[in-house]
Amino acid sequence: MASAISIKNLSYSYGDSKILKGLSFNIKTGEFFVIIGPNGSGKTTLMKIAAGIIKEQKGRLNILGQKIGSYTKKNLAKKIAFVPQMIPTDSPFTVSEVVLMGRAPHSGFLGFSRQKDVEIAMQAISFAGVEHLAHRRINQLSGGESQRVFIAKAICQEPEILLLDEPTASLDLAHQIKTMDLMEKLREKKKMTVVMISHDINLAAMYGTCILLLKTGKIISLGSPEDVLTFETLEKAYGCKLLVDKSPVGLFTRITPVPQRYLEEDKQGGPLPRKF
Amino acid sequence: METNEINPHKIIKRILSISFFLSILLVIAIFLGISIGSTGSGIDEIFKAVFSDIDVDPLLSAIIWKLRFPRVLLAALVGAALSLGGLVFQALLRNPLAEPYILGVSGGSAIGAIAGILIGFSQYPGVTITAFAGSSLVLVAVLAISSGHAILKQDTLLLAGVMVNSFCSAVIMFLISMTQDARLHSIMFWLMGDFTMTNFTQVSILTAILIPCFILIFLLSDSMNLLLLGKEMAVTMGVNIKVVTLILLITTSFMVSATVSHCGLVGFVGLVIPHLLRLIIGPDHRVLVPASILGGGAYMVFCDLLARALPIQGEMPVGVITAMIGAPLFIILLRHSRV
Image (cartoon, rainbow over all chains, first blue to last red; front, side, top):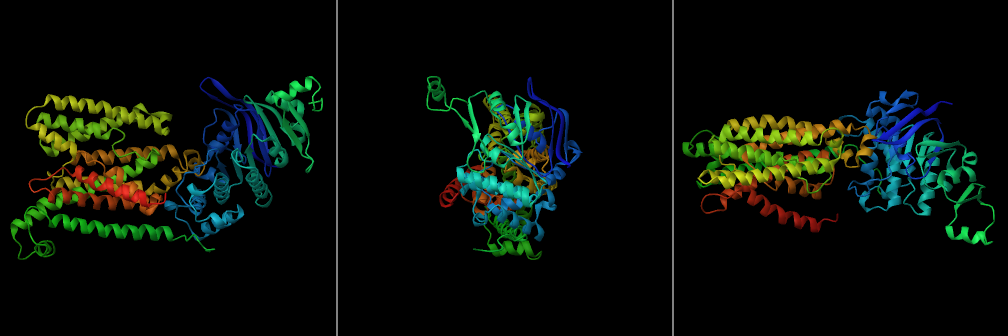
């Protein structure tokens, strides 16, 4: 299968500190690719390079078989959409205005929209399930609602690859699942390649088709959730005690971090199973 | 449920209708501006003087065409440029307190103007040229200080501007404290904004400078909307933010320098008009840019009219009026808006 994103020997540093240290891997088209790893592992930097926000320093990054530097900003925006970690929740624009702005890379003079742009925007709004919010302003919405609006904006951009930086970070359980379901639907119905960063390994296990585990700018593990999310690999990466078992729902790998006090109780023969 | 809520032509209709309304306002303001003054003539006589060329008192005709008309046009241009400048800087720096002078343009042109007045240059073209030279120098300095990558960090730019302005204020105070003769009066009037010394050449030159700036900024109004969603989001929606930011910064500062060098530091209009318009017509810059040009122009002509008409003797600085009307008006609107 063709690669949506292919990366070879990619390095990046801010001043003296090396953030990414010679990464090489491919993201296949149609994948639900989840990047996990401890804080400071370089996940966001990696995503910002792929989104064209910061420039690669060493190595190569190809988007759909073409060097990222060879795209104009507008052409890259037709291929890749990005939903940043900090979405502008204080924006005074209305939901439909913001979603329609997603047509920016496709539209011409002053961003005036044609009938076709409007139709695509309406479809994106209903695909993301935010029709009922269309007239509201962004600054009147909750965090979960505005998150879905910006995903709708990204859908309206009609990209082949969708990048999301911790889209579920500040959401309640229902909105987390709604957001993840939406991305799964995008992958299945719109054939988009979805790449997301997440700190929630359980969500990664439930939705990811491929998982990349980064630590201090290096790849610790890459592969299917079953291969990557093992007790040995995760403990090595995160440096804390974890319980890895199967969730009774759907038999997903389930990861439970273990509080310090249980470890102490366990030494004295506490209530937990002995094997972590 | 309303259906078909997004109409593709709605935005064009909005731009045209709001521009049309504000144009009428501007024309009315200009007409009132040339009608009212210390030589009390009836409106009907003014009408005759403007719309026909027979039966007109040559003195009245001269007052209208040689004195009031260039002055009113200058006021309209200044109001337009300063309001648009404020609008652009508020969007670019994402700071509601941003105003057209924020990058140090005011301090630089004031030093230039004061130097020109102290040397003994005439108001035009001498002081105009020194003021423009001063503001250009400061602008280059500020851009150099925050050059390279830092230009995208609005705080660096903002702080560089504030520091340069503070330094300039100190120099201005020093120059004023050293001046004792009648030139002090000219300096104070320049610092408060002054439309009295205007002729048609000045107005035509300023028009020729400002119109291309207005057009360029309008063409980038769509990118300004995207920039409001944050720089990262704007980049990934196809905006070349470095180029857009640089063009907007330089065009706007150039426009403001050219303006203040003709009339001195007219204050407040650039801060309040963009906010007023945003409260009334919303955040879309494709509408706000033409609205700021026309609305700011009309507002300034109206304020200048009051500055001439209100005092029994002489006139007061127009900057007094812009703030005295603008601030309360803005507070009233702020309290009534649901933002």
